[in-house]
Amino acid sequence: RPADFGDLLFEAAVEGYDHVASVTGVTTDRLARIVIYNNHRDFCAFYAPNSCQDWVGGQAFSGITVQQGADRDWLVYDVVPHELAHVFYNEVFRDTWVRVPTWFNEGIAVESDGIDHSREKALVTEAAADGELIPLRHMGTQTSGLAHDAIHLWYAETYSLVTFIADAYGEQKLGEVILTLADNHPMEETLFWSLNMDLIEFEMAWREWLGYPV
Image 1 (spheres, rainbow, N blue to C red):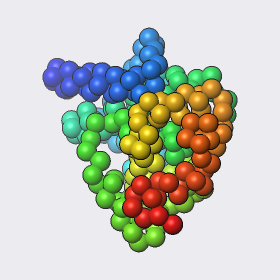
Image 2 (cartoon, rainbow, N blue to C red):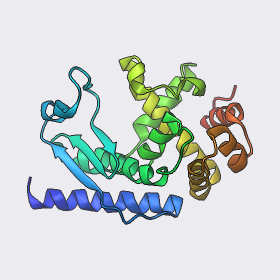
Image 3 (tube, rainbow, N blue to C red):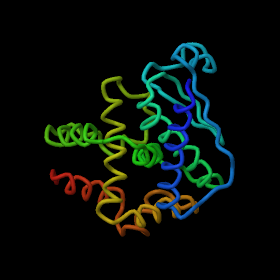
């Protein structure tokens, strides 16, 4: 890849880091490495046989993120910031032993990437209008357990749920939710302490924010 490709990736990484640091008030000095495979076949080489799914664009581990592809904009504005957010939040949750809900973990990463999320917003709004939203009680399942056509809606809802907190209560409140959870308070307890609502009330408030109250 040409040098300006690396420059763009670095700029995207800095912007993503600054965003997460501003939300949480947390910084880390640990080096983060980015590994990019040229194509999906090579990317799947480190997976167990027959376990690499076509829709997966990247994976985040402790201190390293691995992704694939040659589409510059997709990597710079979507995949790299998303996976780097996971690396950063892995540091935030490093000493957390309570379970971080999958929907929240993915939602804060999607909220951190640099793309326009009008598609996700439209997908969630359409699902709400049609009564086809995935209930929050089912959002904790791994995306690998969903039907393929539900994966995009699942990710869109994770983004919408996290954006609801930031939009309705402010990014500082979102940071408070993240840090309270990181301090080993289960999600329902975290929502009660931070937003004064339980999971059901949170879901109802989110639907009302979408314009489709129950």
